[in-house]
Structures are given as C-alpha cells and as structure tokens.
Amino acid sequence: MKKDSVDEAIDLYVTERMVRGKESASSHFLACIYLKQQRWEIAEYLQRICGMTRYYIDLATVTRNPFKGPEIAWLGTMLCLAAYAVMLISMEEQRTLGILLLSGVMVNACYLMRRVAAKWCELHVMVAIYDEIVQITEHELESMA
Image 1 (spheres, rainbow, N blue to C red):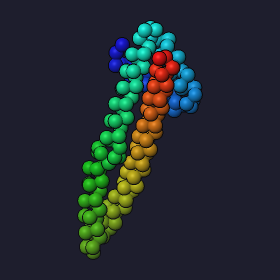
Image 2: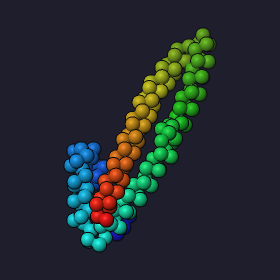
Image 3: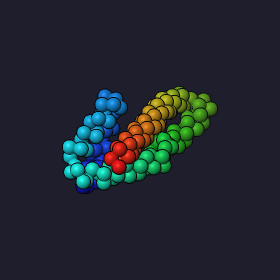
Image 4: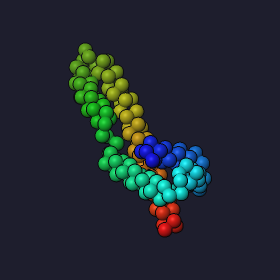
C-alpha cells in the first residue's frame, strides 16, 4: 500500500464530488476501496486515507491566506507602480503617461482581487471536501469495528 494509492483514492473522491455530488462520490469512493484492497488491508488503508486527509486539511489551513505566494509580490509591485503613476500625473508634461500607467495598474488590481477571491473560495471548498473524506472514513472504520 503506497502513498500514491492513498492519494489516488482521495483524488477520486474529490473529482467525483465536484462533478456528481456527495452521495455518488461517497459510494464510488467506498466501492473503489473495497474492490482494490484485500479484506485484511481495508482498515489500515482507511486509517491511512484518514491520516493523509487530515494532513491535507492542516496544510490547507496553514496556507489559508490567499496572499501567500506570488500574489503579495504582485500587489507590492502594483502599489509601487501606482505611486509612480500618481507622481507622473502631478507633472504637466508626463500626465498622459501617468494616467495610462495608473489605469493599467487598476486593471491588474481588479484581476488580482478576482484571482485571490477564486483561490480563497477553492481552498475553502477543498477543506470542506477533505473534511467529508475524514467523516466517511471514520464512519466506515466505526462500522467495521
């Protein structure tokens, strides 16, 4: 039983859950586990899935801030460019360049905010789906005992 097979089972549930819903994904997830594993390996496999999913939840919780990553550098660059554009707008002979630069910064800022919001929503959905996997595996382990 390798880490890849555990990740494959988790990925199977996540993709199925995104497309068809919780009930269908749950039944296919459990059917896949019972068909791929030997009878004596099922409990250990479910425990490994539960542990790996908890690890993914902890990892996602640590990275919950959507500005961790390249977005913060992009935001800093846009703020510097916006300050420079405002300075150019204050000069009579460079006003057109400043207006164009500031409008470009504003367009990129809107794109960044949309991207951060989408990333934030996707992260919360993934945490919720991982939590469902933990609940399914714990329920199945309890019913086996």
